[in-house]
Length: 219
Image (cartoon, rainbow, N blue to C red; front, top):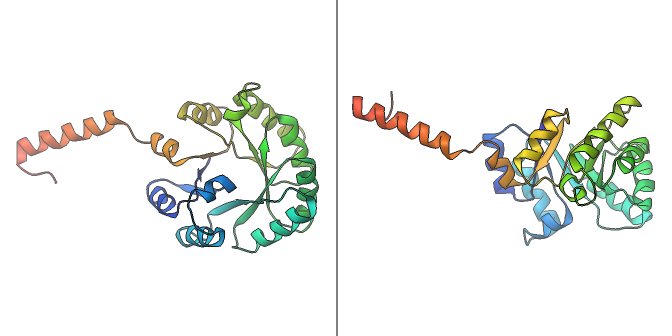
């Protein structure tokens, strides 16, 4: 199971990496603009807090084939463990084929049905990002993601699903339960996966009882 954080905030990446086993970080154009800094500065700050083995995913901005290929090559040059996010438009699918031939890792993104994910896998995308919650406006996003995994397995395709657009921990739980091997979640959802006021209350009770008995809050 790979836990990925969906943010461009270096401080939050560092904080969560100290708490959780964070496999990598996904960004998108909107997330990067929220940092109110130049693109390269945001990427450099993220790179400084990531370990070499942690993956970073960065998306192209252009929408035509030639420009997406150019931007993909540039993104691929930014660090060792990086993948280029390419939307599954017609131009994007052409781009995925080209970048794959150049041995550039690609995450096919903005996937809204299993067929889109499947053809992106056929084109060589190493990673697939179905938009689970947004997909749920049209169909069952969880089920469609599971179907995509079944389609990949049935045809011997090794593309890895990274479930995206997740809005609550129940969605994450259902995906993990059904064998989806990677999820990318925003910071608030990542925190909710381990925080519980009941846990905190229990710990406080233990400490209070210990203090009453031994007049100290440590062993």
